[in-house]
Length: 393
Image (spheres, rainbow, N blue to C red):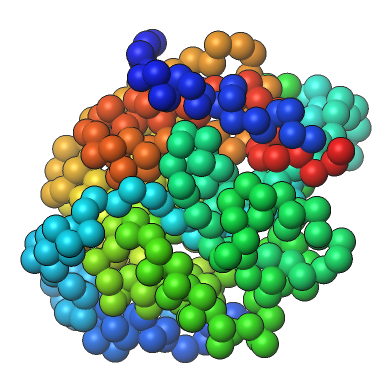
């Protein structure tokens, strides 16, 4: 079992002091960003395996020239070895992270045990309604660790969601909260005594009236943040983010979560473009396997990107592993056991991401140390009952 000594700043802003517990039209055409990234052409290349390329063939959107590795063209992107270097000399290393990702109203339903059979009854121990989301939790984690993180996401303009929007604005700023949804995104999560969870999500779509404004707002967001974390959101907003990535030397970290994979089933060009542009990917083991299949590659060593520097694959209570370019070797990192009994595993992965971003992206620490610090922070989240700020009371 790994024991990690945190610096005074990290100890001061541990999850126990996050303040989380006490505070009560699908895209049908290739996106502009994809054209900028790939010159308007498909970028999958056949690895000689029919199964690995079935997704691209089935979609009928991507050309499949024969080759030995998957290469995503970045002809329109700045060269990271030249433009990135000169850019960093001008503005310095990033000091804060902008997070692009969903905000959700999370209803956490705690039960003694999960149903063992169909229609079996289980007793509810507690119900908590709180603020959550793939963009919110990493941003909150960064804020509580002393980083001036920002959030770009779609929110609801409905009167019933004023409390949610108020909490979001008070915690992460209101400048980039776009009221383009008819109602807030929502998640209902059943949490058993053994830590197992079942999640149902209602993902709202961006209203058409807001489509033309997304690009302008996203551009201002990228003007402010030279490091951006991209998680699951509406495909239209992700497309706008990818357009900005194609025009700037921004450092981009992508959380390739099951939520992101699900939202981009009908827009594979956005998923592939984000991955091609990322300097780091964060995901769990099942998401990693799904992503490799979606890209039609045999493994990350067969993936060519001049931007991608590291990949982190988490494994819950088993810790995880990471690899650095050219991804020929993987290194395991140990889990950090929580100091108390596990209460709620929901959101631990997002806390991990937020802590990793601060250590690796902002403090420029080695991937190994960033994973250890992030694992320690995630373990602290396990003993907290909320995913984010309380909405009920």
